[in-house]
Amino acid sequence: MITKDMKIVEVLQIKPEAARVFGQYGMGCIHCLMAHTETVEEAAAVHGVDVEDMLAQLNA
Image (cartoon, rainbow, N blue to C red; front, side, top):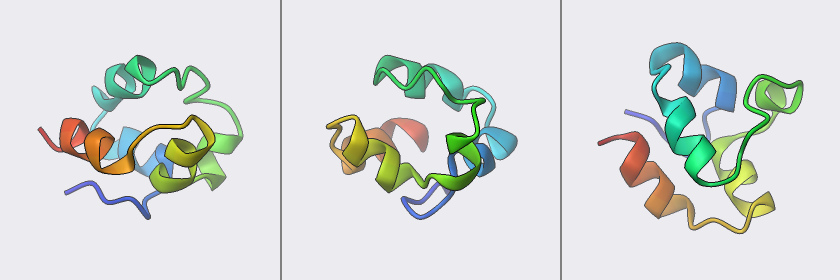
Protein backbone atom coordinates (compact mmCIF):
# COMPACT_ATOMS: atom_id res chain seq x y z
CA MET A 1 0.00 0.00 0.00
CA ILE A 2 1.26 3.42 -0.95
CA THR A 3 1.15 5.97 1.86
CA LYS A 4 1.54 9.74 1.96
CA ASP A 5 4.83 9.55 3.86
CA MET A 6 6.59 7.49 1.16
CA LYS A 7 9.16 9.19 -1.06
CA ILE A 8 8.18 9.54 -4.72
CA VAL A 9 11.09 7.34 -5.76
CA GLU A 10 9.94 4.59 -3.35
CA VAL A 11 6.49 4.62 -4.91
CA LEU A 12 7.97 4.34 -8.40
CA GLN A 13 10.20 1.45 -7.34
CA ILE A 14 7.31 -0.65 -6.06
CA LYS A 15 4.77 0.51 -8.66
CA PRO A 16 6.37 1.92 -11.84
CA GLU A 17 2.96 2.55 -13.41
CA ALA A 18 2.43 5.23 -10.72
CA ALA A 19 4.34 7.55 -13.05
CA ARG A 20 1.13 7.94 -15.07
CA VAL A 21 -0.80 9.00 -11.98
CA PHE A 22 1.86 11.52 -10.99
CA GLY A 23 1.82 12.83 -14.56
CA GLN A 24 -1.94 13.35 -14.44
CA TYR A 25 -1.36 15.68 -11.52
CA GLY A 26 1.31 17.69 -13.32
CA MET A 27 4.22 16.04 -11.54
CA GLY A 28 6.51 15.62 -14.50
CA CYS A 29 9.78 15.63 -12.63
CA ILE A 30 9.41 12.16 -11.15
CA HIS A 31 13.00 11.23 -11.88
CA CYS A 32 14.60 14.44 -10.64
CA LEU A 33 16.43 14.94 -7.36
CA MET A 34 13.24 16.02 -5.58
CA ALA A 35 11.72 12.58 -6.19
CA HIS A 36 14.36 11.17 -3.85
CA THR A 37 13.63 13.58 -1.01
CA GLU A 38 9.99 14.60 -1.39
CA THR A 39 7.13 12.56 0.05
CA VAL A 40 3.86 11.96 -1.71
CA GLU A 41 2.19 14.35 0.71
CA GLU A 42 4.80 17.08 0.15
CA ALA A 43 4.55 16.72 -3.63
CA ALA A 44 0.77 16.93 -3.46
CA ALA A 45 0.96 20.11 -1.37
CA VAL A 46 3.42 21.77 -3.74
CA HIS A 47 1.20 20.96 -6.73
CA GLY A 48 -2.08 21.89 -5.02
CA VAL A 49 -3.38 18.34 -5.19
CA ASP A 50 -5.64 16.57 -2.70
CA VAL A 51 -3.32 13.89 -1.32
CA GLU A 52 -6.19 11.53 -0.47
CA ASP A 53 -7.48 11.62 -4.05
CA MET A 54 -4.02 10.95 -5.39
CA LEU A 55 -3.44 8.11 -2.94
CA ALA A 56 -6.71 6.51 -3.99
CA GLN A 57 -5.52 6.49 -7.61
CA LEU A 58 -2.04 5.29 -6.70
CA ASN A 59 -3.47 2.39 -4.71
CA ALA A 60 -6.14 1.45 -7.27
